[in-house]
Length: 449
Ligand code: NDP
Ligand code: 2IT
Image 1: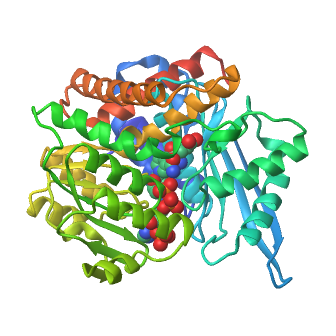
Image 2 (image 1 turned 180 degrees about the vertical axis):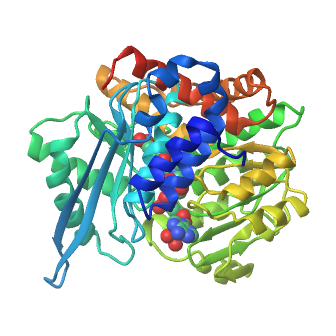
Image 3 (image 1 turned 135 degrees about the vertical axis):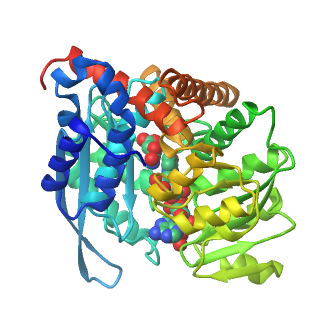
């Protein structure tokens, strides 16, 4: 990564001092600030308006106690959060993560990324993120419901369809959104689009479940087009086996690629013959209904299962990280490159450590950073909000076409911005500057707030 200088270095020092022991937040802020430095140097108005100093500070951050009772009658206490990062472009928008590792640093990094990602979508959404250090694994549906009800009992006073609209992320899928929505409706006495990712028959949008994965594949197609190529016949590795991973694999199959790996936090499966749509059906049932481990796929079909490892040393043309932050280390990036991988499209948020990103950029492979490549999820959330406001659902084809158009636009915008700043092909710089400029200009328009 380029070394920070001048103003950026000063702001990073403040961020470090104000947010001790928050490595993920610092990582995300450093990456963005270093790459937008040329825009800040070019435009005095951003320096005079103290945009960098303001943009790194959440507008509001809430954390709260979430007490709940398990099936045996035992009381548990978790910590819930909502980070309302920036509302220059619209109401706060971003997912909720339920995972035992959740803390302020992780949610602030995610909320920070969300601000620029949402700006790139072209839709009117600010950025936020929330969640809890609750682990849904091994909990009954009733326990998850009681947890969600307790969580929303506090959160409901801070959110609303024109204020802050949460959605899913790791550990929060259709089931959790349902329980959260039910409790919001009961407390607020209103049926509004306060959450996205809702079920189809009560306000959800077609294609929202698919959107993150489909979007990451559409983004990969746009990157390949710049070299006159397509995904047909490409061997792809995918990590994760949740929402983002499942629909990445589904779309990759449909465009003629071959997916050879998927994973969960216990290990990865390697199916040389390809995880076809039929085999994916088994994984979807395994993960979404039975909620078991990916290992069972290997046991059933006799393919390789590698315990405790990630899939990055498996030979591939294209890699789609779909699990979590920092899942591609510098070593992993080296292995990917040595094995001939020349495209990485990030469905997960910040899955590559900074040194891995540096390697991808240095080798000039096609690299789509998360805030661009995975923006399809929140983009269709934005389309769900539009449909809720109109009280009219759009057909599948319309939402899918809009999603495809948004991903193409994000790629074009990042590509053109990179060229404008003398870094052709560098989508990190392109996405960060393009996302930043819109937010910064809106902040200037709205005064010192
Ligand atoms: P899910 O909970 O549906 O799936 C998460 C997957 O990642 C699971 O396979 C899980 O394994 C694995 N995983 C989670 N944490 C870890 C970890 N610490 N180490 C290894 N594996 C892990 O979440 P999503 O698919 O929704 O989210 C995946 C990624 O995509 C996240 O980075 C999220 O922020 C990002 N994203 C999601 C969007 C959405 O709309 N859902 C939109 C944009 C980005 P296990 O089951 O063992 O925990
Ligand atoms: O990281 C993300 O963009 C998401 N988890 C989706 C957020 C949303 O509001 O749909």
